[in-house]
Length: 104
Image 1 (cartoon, rainbow, N blue to C red):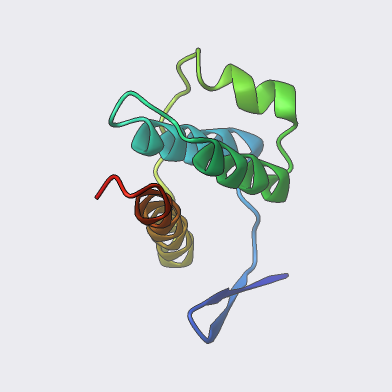
Image 2 (tube, rainbow, N blue to C red):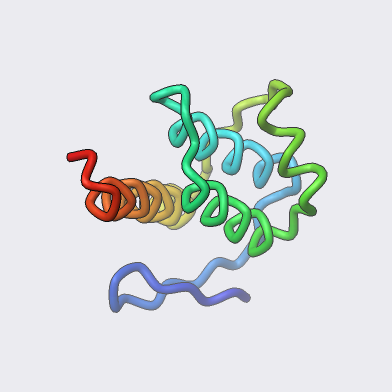
């Protein structure tokens, strides 16, 4: 059983996502980050860290920028909450990057 936190609330995941689900999750995050057709270094590093946490190697991670992956929606409510949390963190990374570079 895996334990993760959403805010201060500990949540348990009984079944880890399959490798294909993990690729889908990461591909969705990459797509979200590239919505403006750019990807800042800080966003790339954040996504690379997520890939590492999901057990996806760097070569496979980088291939997701150039290949289509079957989109698999998270099945459980806990998985959907976790994916939403990852997307919120990614938005914060982009927001802080904008503030630091005075693009706002």
